[in-house]
Image (cartoon, rainbow, N blue to C red; front, side, top):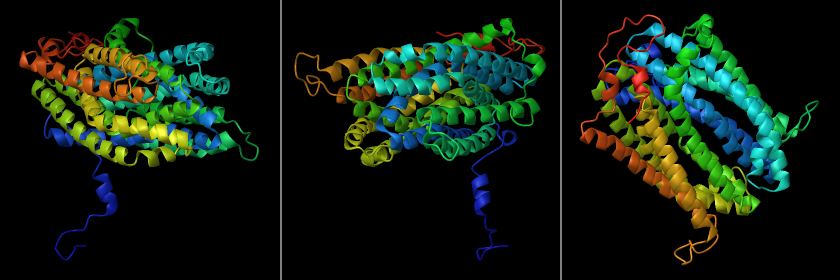
Length: 510
């Protein structure tokens, strides 16, 4: 049926489907860079927004359960991030190797890399879960929060620690599918599990019928159960091999020789994520020097912060995949063009979100906790960092490019040096009023100094990342030079990863 203009009308479902492209429809090594990055990253935005839905659901319901419960997960969230960050390096390594082999049309090597990555990631989840469960109480003592909050946070983190293998299992599924260029399938799986988590949260937190009231433990159980369900579905999809990448049970026996390839790329990536996590945890120690409403405000603000940054993280991951596949295809020109375009797009998108966040900061905080003290401090936090959102978007775009090129040590150095050596000292000095001269708010003890440190570190990190990238180009040191200087020599047989480009070389850094 045609409209009066002679054109066939497009249905709403067709318009929605037009926003997504399957793996077979995407060629990340040729054609329009903006279109490729959009179709690769847009499903990641949806996936990450859904993933944040886990945390937002916990924050929403626990905020109505009690302020102490909300403060408890505020205390636990950075520790969860730390545990996951320690194992994320393996998933990054697997994603980079799969992307480079996919770009080089080496499907056998890509599948072997995926199979080994799944095995080592699950083992890491079991090990870290056991360590976390054994020492979580001692780790939380560092924050020095009120006894009631500490007890609740310990209950929450013990359940999460036992569920780390499930959290890691779904994370590696997302990473490997992304490396192969499929970001739609993980999005669909995530949607189902978020619905499950949202349904379970109020039932387990408040209790209903025969279900007892579990409070913060109920929120943790809901999250672990939903993530475990997602992991089972993800592993089943990869075993079938009908979407994205395929894994093979026979290739999942841990290969200690191959682990060196994963660790060479993965350890610096873990350092990058761990550096970010330690920074948040260290800042939380300073936050707990203030009253419980400030701790709760920080927890809500961090969750809002993570939600707003979903587009930047999606672009980051999209650049990582496009960089890896174009290195595999020998397209250094597209690597540079992709990174520059992503940085500009990320700056623009995040700046717009920053304006909206600044304007509606109190209303956003009030959605999770309507107590006046929490709303006031949470809004102050958001309004300090909102004007810097665009700069952090630039940082994430270039970090994805560094990782996709195998230069995970570069991304790690920026995260550790900038966040650890700039954000933390400024947060402590500016918030504790230890400066002898009363300059601005530096001479008084106030949490505003912590919010100021977040803003400054984000700007500085973006300038360093952009300068590092452009300085290398100015000196003729292309990011892909070292991984492309070895021509293709191998046959692509077996589990070797020495053909052009070499992920072994890609794992080295300046």
